[in-house]
Image 1 (tube, one colour):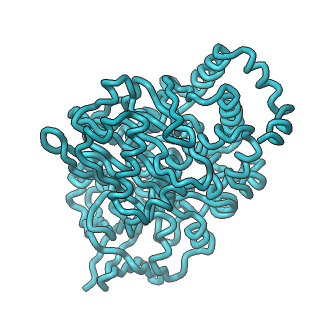
Image 2 (cartoon, rainbow, N blue to C red):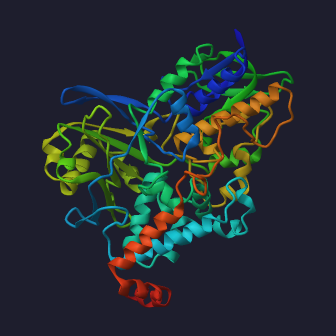
Image 3 (spheres, helix red, strand yellow):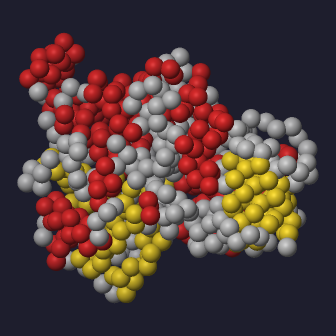
Length: 530
């Protein structure tokens, strides 16, 4: 039996459901269907009900934070009557350097590593910001240095730019969480492009206004999925229904076939699958070469998210923020990269920890019990014995085990991918349009990117329905915003953060700061002694 629809949306995550919501909201008589391969909606958003001291509460197993500079998702949150609260950052932060026996404490933005290492880190990040400023977020290939920057990895850049191993290792630690990979797996040009879409590297990692970890929802981010589902009741949602082929040989419609052998026709298709999974669908005619190559060169990062609920927020009682980082040398097994306070909006205490990159590769083959023991051991060293004695429940989510997701938090580009195949991310293929956070034009890899890409894809389809000629990935909806998070009235600026770093470091040591001016000349001596 054949079923007919105006629009078929492949993928029931935040991008796919936002696309449906915008289609139905704009044109209510459209017949829309969602094909979700998994047995649940949400994609990289998922919640779990966990035991607490006085019952249960919900926590995010996937996408977790939003920020004031992420205009698209914040508008969606506002439209649905949801609310946010600031991420808890008050109190001391901890860094373990190479060992649980070497832990230091700090407050504010400046980590407690050596003064020369801090200066090294600040100098290199400023260099990255300067490089990223050359990348046009709307047309990155116009960057004059694209060929040079897209042929090397971030590891090559780090080896050349950093003078001290500790500062380089702290940088690598941040990449394991932001991208779920090692610097050696990532194109330098891709990370610069990624930064240009977010406002800079510090907007990805720092606790500043407008940064990625600024707010949590009161409740879980999965509420967005539930609210979207409630507002697209006319849409046919099919779970456990992977699409295995798309035939576009007919001039009037495309034919989709599912794993179960059912066939459907649609005049328009929006595919929100991660790029590396698109090859699972057989296309007739075949996908363009560029789109095929994009998928093979854009694997998903690897991140394991661990959530621990507690009887009390002992870290707050002890004056700690719950935020910590584990700086380790290359080829170590971790497991911890970073931790944050994850106390629920109802006040139920919890911590969240991340295992990323090469550490995730190692720990993915261990049991939950083994991962729990390793994580708790690290937390005991960082935050005290209460990390063990006050523990109620431990759970982790290894996103690489999700068959129809394949990893987290985002698809990453290897050298040569962005330069040659970037345009294929959003270029429609006959009746197929592309969504998903990897195709976003602001905040790739985040909830905001998923929302933006869903609206953009919907607008492309609506333009086709109206008979308008295709425009190059232009969204017209008021929910969509291409505003960059810096340089706007009421939006955070990079200047205050850089000023705080420079001023703080100068106050710590005028002498060290003077030595910093000569670090490039000193580098050969430093390197030879390392």
